[in-house]
Image: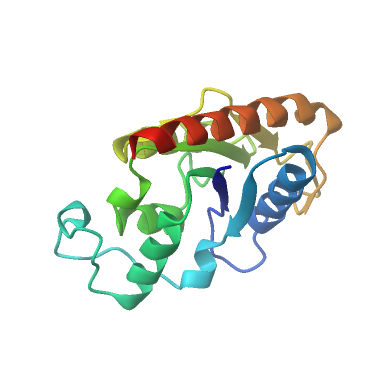
Length: 187
């Protein structure tokens, strides 16, 4: 049984991101058997901007900032991740990028999936994030899920995903859990 984190991608007040992440968590708990799912909200860690004069990958998992260490320790608990990213100006949010930049090896040889949303389905953010995650030696699933601010949100504020996303969600969760199970054998 793998443990999968649903990782939020924003920290701002009034964010749509938490709605999408909570939906995914509930969906997984109801539809994916034999695996454990947990919400990993980057806002709860109150991480600073990444301005360190060090290379995280060279610290051996021991970080100078206690908040970053807490984040790293929590990330280490999981076998896989579903990253929920909005699209801000054709990219991912700075808060998610900072959270990723603070740490390094905690993600190695694990599985990841990406769920994006935005006016253009968050596709640009999805592409950027995919490249970043691959750099962490995360195996990023081919099946992604994208939601539209125009059709999956009421007034761009209340998340109400269309039913037709179920097939993509099932395929994505199947891939990320299968890969997470398989990658445990090489860690």
